[in-house]
Length: 334
Image (tube, rainbow, N blue to C red; front, top):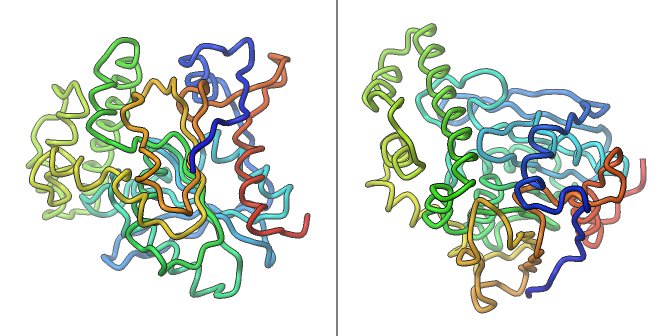
């Protein structure tokens, strides 16, 4: 199913770049109440950090952040606060090395890496076999979520899922970030990724992990990398056993998995998203009967800010996401 959203951009943020930049750079979302962290040891003896909001036996929503984001990203903390008010608990998966401390192996995270989200889900489900659970992913996290939903099909016990601003075809999105003002995002994201790798190397050196250090050093000097095509070929493909960047993009793009999704899933995309083009949007025959694609004319990338008062922005996603989830589970208000 495909439809248009009811989103209307704020008059003072009508440009798609403003929609994208404002929440990323200006929004300062407070840490929600009832907040605590847990460190999970992964099957390969590394770790991931999970940040929870809420307590009790209310429905639980798994949240997955985007590239270079974390549980501290404004869109994550804002949604956690909103969900708590509406009777949901939430648990944020910080991808490896994104929680404020580098992880203990050369292994990173990437757009197609679904082992950690599955481990996260299985851990929660073992603890709470009867709890209604849902999942929400943003950008790269949305791609990971959709790919995982398609891989698992009928195996998952989830009531609903939502994915926002998803780079459904990774190659097209990487190329879009080489053009026009979108290069601004590419420069900043690559800078953060290089810093992530440098901090990882320093951390591994402090632990004396010779084999893991060698894997990072084998990648060579990353300072000259100027595009995602180069970074993903040099770093992601080599560290995660892909043949090359083309193999990585082909196998990890989530659009090919949409037909296999068995969980009621809302995909929210913006036609003016500066991270992608209209080419990434799937045809109706590529969607399973469980997938509802909503396309907005405006909204930017993980923006979707409305409201008439610049002093009181309205974060529309924090209305639409709980609205969709509540159609499939009706928690008691806290």
